[in-house]
Image (cartoon, rainbow, N blue to C red; front, side, top):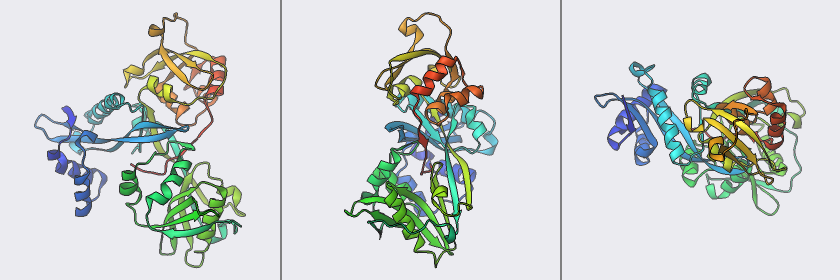
Length: 392
């Protein structure tokens, strides 16, 4: 078996593998589009000695919001293997190659949608994003809001809604910092209508992308920058009450709708969604926005069997302004004192990308740390919310 990037000559075989693995038939129009946007540098494959494709994945160069900072991220997608090549280490080899390439490309974090959480946990990814799915009937809708703005139906106009999305996305950890191409190829690839809420000054503050079919409204994306926008969009949804029996929508785990309605007994389902992984701990920590406080440090032992550059003893040094650095003990000339905190990269990911608190991880046996170290981490790791509206 050997690992290499795909070439244009591998395109047909890659499509055949995807169609088989994900059980669909790609329409000719989409096939032409995929060929037009096929970037061999983003596709890594495992091949046998005869040059036949055994397994492949896509490594997407994306950006993600992390606690208010836009970071370079490697999105792992389209992982597929022919049945006869399964359980021969193909995906393991591909993931190790992907980790090396992400590090070289400065992608300090990676995200993926798992077919099985347990499988990717073995390689250091951890669940970081959960979402809520709602199913409401009209009698569950919020009451009419008295807002000064108006709602207008428009076409799929990125220029109108992208800055609203960006302001809301930056409030979360895990949301994509979308490009124009992403809007065009990914967000608007699903047919639907777009309704925009504008405030009294005519400025967009919220929107929804939705479909209405068979008396069901399916909200594909709901973004409200302000509470007036939330109320105005719900007013708009309420105006469909004579033609719909249900509304289906997916929202962030912290969405307040159940508290805001008279009857919160509608179907709500919290669903694990995406996983993340810190690729390069030193580089990631240097970009992360910690809470401000007195300058302080703790000694950390980090383990990572799949990304050995993350292994070792580090001084985690917090600056007063919230910046921090990881410095290897050998490089810093520190003594051989025992680590105040022992954890793996997967647990570090849960702390900095998954919203899990140090006290919880300590109680769960994932973080082996002195009380003082736990207290320091509790102070310096900010409380944040996770969300992702996209799929890849």
